[in-house]
Length: 71
Image 1: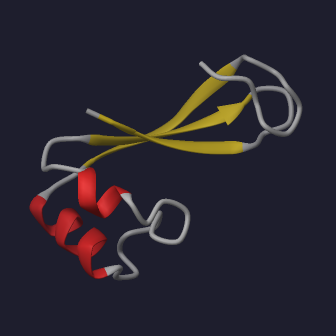
Image 2: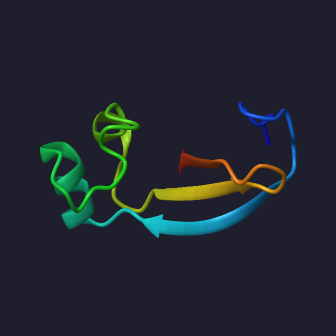
């Protein structure tokens, strides 16, 4: 995992993992409220596919949340 942008720590916890469904992908492309990462990662709507995952990690030292698109 990468270093935390806030504190430099390299230890993270998995907080959540969402599977991208057809409805979720439509919400991403239309920037609907049901897509919670729209303002944070607007480019994901162009590269995500049904079956991909969005995993949210939390820094174990400062609790910063970091979301990642996983294929």
